[in-house]
Length: 371
Image 1: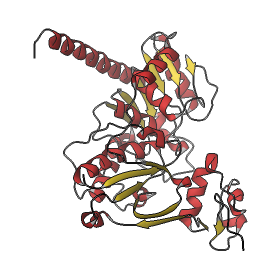
Image 2: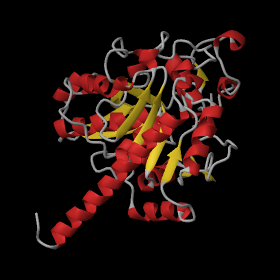
Image 3: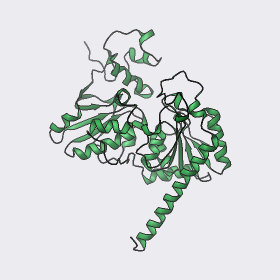
Image 4: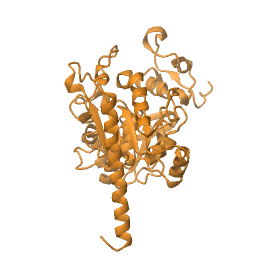
C-alpha cells in the first residue's frame, strides 16, 4: 500500500458528520486533506478531540517536573494555539522558564498568525507552526485549552495560572518583551499614520472569542465620533474587515507584525477583552480595556499600562464568565457611558504624554552627565 502523502490525515475513529462535528470547513479534513490556512484552528481541534490522527506528528507530553531530570541541550516545546492574548502573556512565563532552565532549549509552537510575534526573541530556540510540525517530539508541554479547563480559572489571573503550573510559583514581576518591534517596522507604521492628526488611537471593535466581549456597534461608533470631535484619530484594526466610519480603517489588512508596530507607535489603544490590549501592554502603550463578562482583576492585575472599565459590580448577572451565550442585552457594556470611555482615554493619553516627557528629561540628563 502506498504511503500517505505529507499533508494528509487519516480518520482515527468513525464520526457522525451531521451531529458531532460542528463547522462546515471540517468537511475538508474528514476527506483527509490538510489546509493549514485558514482552517488551522479546525485542524488543531480535530486532532485534540481525537477525530483524526496525524501520522507524521508524534507529541510526547511531559509535565513541568520532568524538566528537572532532562539532559542539558534537550529541547522542550511549549504549545499554545489561541488566542493572541494568551500567547503574549504565556511568553512572559516561558521567559521565566528559560531562565530557570538555562541548559535546556525552550521552543514555542503556535498558529501561523501568532508565530511571527516571536521573531528575534533570544530565549526562544525555535518557533513551530502547530499544523506543520512533522516528526517525533519527545518533550512537549501542551497548553492548548489548559487555562480554559483549569478548575481555578475563575479565582486567579490567567497568567498566574500558567506560572503556577510551569514554574511552581508566581514571579514577583512579569517582563512582557514579546514581541520585539524593530525600528524599520516602526518607521513603516508611522508612515501609515503620517497623514492623521495626533493622538493616534487604535480601536479593536470585536472580541475574537465571543460577542459577549464585543462592544455594541452603536456604542463603538458613538465613542469613535466623540474622540474624533476631541481631535483624535481613530484607527480600526480588527482581523476581519468591517465598514464603519473612522479616521482610518485597517480591518482585515494587517498581519500580526504590522499590528504590533502600529500598537507600538500609537498613543493609546481601546479594546474589549481580546488580544489587542495584551499586545499594547507588551510594547508599553497605554490601553483602555472594556470588560464585560470577566472582571479585570482576572486579566490585567499585573499590567502597568492598563486603564480598565468594568461595570460588573453594578449588574446582578455579572460576572457571567461567558456563560450566557444567548445574552443580547449586554447590560455590562450598556452601563458604560460614551463620555466615561472617552474620559478614560484622556487619562491614558495623559500617561503617554508623561512617559514621553520623562524619557526626554532622562535623555537630556544623560547627555549632560546628570544621573
